[in-house]
Figure 1 (cartoon, rainbow, N blue to C red):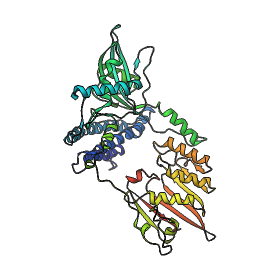
Figure 2 (figure 1 turned 180 degrees about the vertical axis):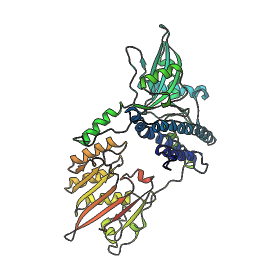
Figure 3 (figure 1 turned 30 degrees about the horizontal axis):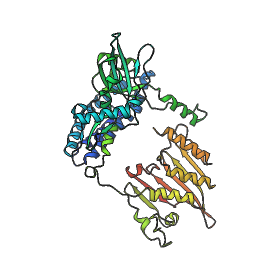
Figure 4 (figure 1 turned 135 degrees about the vertical axis):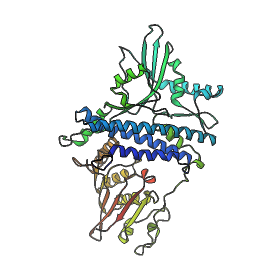
Length: 480
């Protein structure tokens, strides 16, 4: 905390928040597999923190906008993150032990019996080896490009004929599960361990000196001069294409690096010792998330089914047949909103039966003349987008502000913007110098030769998937 200002540093404050997320992995009153999910969330949060916040601080130093405060900040970040990694290591170990008490084991290759080891060997040969691409580094083959957040095996080799050391990299296929389940038992081994056990076959004429798992984090902070950009969409598309080559801001490794590994990775990735983090638990969030999804009802929270708000179930004096008994969806949401406002609370109350239904009916209703919306993030199944497309195709005026600068959803929002434009919708790509984070919809409807306005104002995204988890409010109203 700054003695002058009385406020704590923004980045360290954020790390305190993520430390509280990590602490949930140690709370015994939380179901076991849910604690694995919190471990994955902690890890995923750190990924975003380094891609954006650490990248911003390092960029200031790289561009010469440095100060002693920036250097101190990076040092404090490293200390705080390393402290959390130690807690995460202990948490993961305890969670694995507790998992074993329920008959579910995550084991090393060395702990397998002969039959189990043979199964893993066959799996690697039949399913994995063909998609691996070992890349050696020598004068004819420069150091390979390492993509953001990809997990790799680094191998230090000695050529048996030439007696020289070489570095090789094997990328772990991101489309394969990180956990391999053995047949007929609840026992798992990590994919990367299984691949490492097959290294002698991948490098038959080489001596394997050392191996390490490593994962690179690159800057993902958009650098766009909006005032100079003639076309914001094109500018963001171009920046996204360049982003995969952005500077490395963190290197995670599974163990302390040997001198050979450190010299190779530091030089080729352009990093300093302070950018290297030793993370002995499975690197990246995927293993924790995969374990959190095991089909073990007694180790999860009880399933939650969002309710349909009571206001939607009450009979409307103005229209007694308000509710459809077939679909259990409100049959005329506009009659309801003329009668009263509705405040919905997600995820306890259904997003699909309220906000989603409001937009769906607006798209289908012949009396609706226009739909206007601000869109920050939406879900991949495109239910909201589908409603807007149907409305545009039916000749309704559809105007959407799509925030192209929505963090990590830039590419998806560009695609939605193009899709809506092709259907005839009016699309605005945000505003120069501002980020549109509001979630609002305005529906213009003609009733008895008069214009009536209906609206939704919410705190959460128009995303039916996250609305099942995140806590948000939404107000549906016809009050001008």
